[in-house]
Image 1: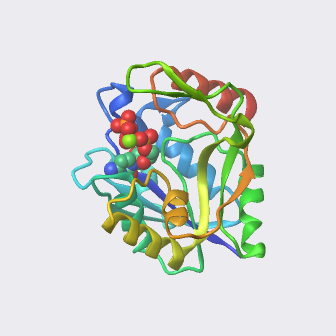
Image 2: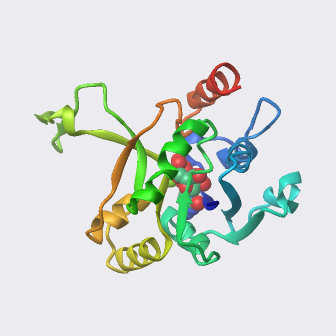
Length: 224
Ligand code: CTP
Ligand code: MG
């Protein structure tokens, strides 16, 4: 069985403070978005990718990859969840993966482990256990309490769910103005199970300038 990935790539990359959205920054000879897409489509169980791009994006059309037969472009929305929903509306599959454009360092091994959930008939996400002691702050910037780290995980992407269930959960959650920062939060909101599949922490979301150095390291030393 082969699967489709929705890649939200319509963000502006505010925290990166660069002169173009971070997904178009070059790294080792190609853009972050191309690293992300090339890596996904190279996986034998991925057949198609839907990329959500900002409606006024001047960069995407110039990428050689824009003409690829396995790629569909849709217009992204104001929030990440809107962009994802636009991508979900463009496909008709049993299951769907959603993966951030800003994560170029996804190991294929992790993708394999996540895709195995299709056999168990429950969706899930890549994640890894937190390592630092976690503090909850109060409004004055003091520690309110220390959280029990043993139950805390970093949520990564890809996230993998039955398409119809995810589309419904995202639609309802957005209409209810719930805080939805990933697909899992919409599924949780709808009362659906979300399995945690242990992934590699190298699968970083490039967010701040220093993350480019990390991504370069992982891409050149670990994933090649
Ligand atoms: N994204 C999107 N549509 C939006 C906002 C974000 O498709 N309206 C995408 C981004 O392009 C990125 C992914 O969602 O690939 C994860 O979001 P994030 O890392 O927050 O990227 P940005 O929103 O671009 O960055 P920032 O929050 O710093 O502005
Ligand atoms: Mg953002």
